[in-house]
Amino acid sequence: MVMPAKRLTEMEVYHCVIPSPLGRLRLLGTARGLSGLAMEDEDGRPFLDSGSVDDASRFSAVIHQLREYFDGRLRRFEIPLDLRGTAFQLRAWRALMEIPYGQTCSYSAQALAIGQPRAVRAIGLANGRNPLPIVIPCHRVVGKNGLLTGYSGGLERKRFLLDLESHSMGCSLSRSSAM
Image 1 (cartoon, rainbow, N blue to C red):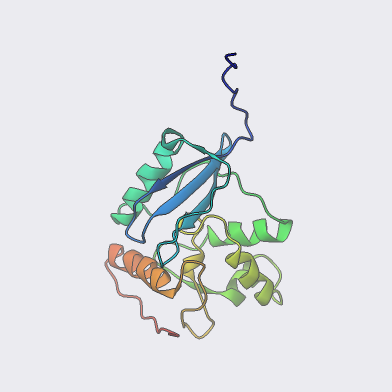
Image 2: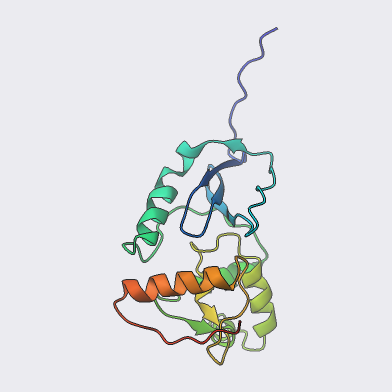
């Protein structure tokens, strides 16, 4: 018996895996937009299967913009996003998108930007749950003293991204490492 082809719905999740200077990246998305970007573990462990449909054609604009970003030619991503999180997380992530390319801010400055100056730890937790690192630039947030602090992809990747942006700007941002 032949079954009819499954009709794709708006909530179906798609994925593809692409190479990058940071290692392999797994893109996740729906018909609404990009919903996840995961970096392969440093030890090369494969990504967990999310039950999504492998379809790189759905990510052509994302892939193009990521290439331009890594080439130093793109400073702000212009792609549809399908973000899901608490109201606080969404505010925190929107604030991240306002940090200019090539610049950094502190967790306390980010908390102040969303009108909750005492929520510094909550900001750190929200940034740690950012489903779209690189696209939503949580790597641009550093400790109040300017030291590199946590990043879901690891501090080496955070340093790489900050260095990439500072070199693209034609300037040198001074940063100390907490490593």
